[in-house]
Structure formats: structure tokens, C-alpha cells
Length: 209
Image 1 (cartoon, rainbow, N blue to C red):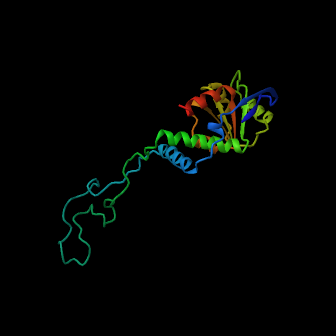
Image 2: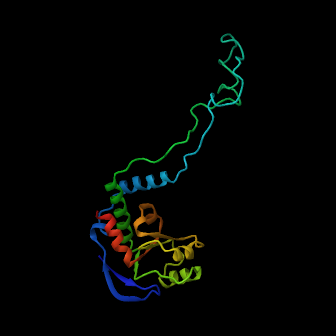
Image 3: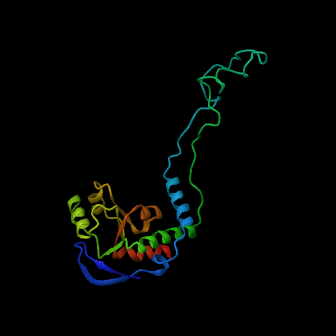
């Protein structure tokens, strides 16, 4: 499929770029998307929740009463889980929530997400996104020129650009990512993608390896 290339003023440059059908026009696989998004969100979890079991609770190990005949549950010591202030049974422990997902499945998920965006005509290609100094006003002007103001927008650049990043930092519905770091969650979480022309080759290189 072909897409017109605009400049940051929203004007048509007269050029068109061809988006690879192998990436932007496949039959989306919803299950691959689900697995990849689940993995991305799982990797963001800290996994530091921890509660003390009976062996970790501070307290005497003196036996509180006779083993049988008390009329209630056995209580070995004051740290017993059946008592208030005792240890917790099967409580959370520090853990890694990540899991293994094959590289080809993750690639399929990214292609599927990009295909959804292409179907929705939610991919805008610009010749470049360049700013001389960090200015939030400059990014707002670009959004207005491209007629995407008010939409959740993802700028995809060929590489890291600190000036553009700092310019978007105060805008809640705007984010920036390098093409090499593009992932399924970022694509789906945006209403529209503004992709620099130079980023297209990076995306294609990553997804056709």
C-alpha cells in the first residue's frame, strides 16, 4: 500500500512511500497480540510483594497449650497462622512475572498491530520530525498541522531524539519511541501513529529478519 508523505506543517510533499504488505497488510492474529501485550505488561510488574511466613515472624517458640483437648485448633506457638499477628500461609513472595514467548510470535504480534493501524488509516508518514530546541508549543503546532490534536499520538522516530522527547514530556496523550524499540502495546495504545520516513526502513528491517 502507498501512503503520501507529509511535512510537519501538514503539507503534502508530493512523494509517496510504499508500505510493505508483509508487515502492514497481513491478516491480524489476535491471540499473538494478546500474548505479546500480556508479556510486555508482565515485564513491567515489580514483583516485590512479600509477606512473612510463620518461620519469619518475630515471636517466642514457647508451646501455648496442650496438644489435644483444648477444644480448638492446635497452636504450636504464638507465630501460628491461626492467631492474630502470626505468619501468613502461602503469602506472596518476590517473583518475576515474565514468561517465554517465541520471537516469531512477537514479530507476528507487531505486524498484526501495524496491520490494524493501516486498516484504520491511522498511520501518518512525515518526512522528518525535527526541532531546534525543546518546546511543547512546537509539538502542539505539529499536532494541529497534522489534524491529530486531541488524539492519543505516538511519534515513531528513526532513533532517539532528546529534543523531541523533552518537547512531548508534558503532553499526557503524546509519546515518542525509537523505531527499534517499537512494540505491540505502544502501537495499540495509540489512536494514531506519526512515523518519520526514516523509521520505516528500521521497522521493516526488524520485522523481516
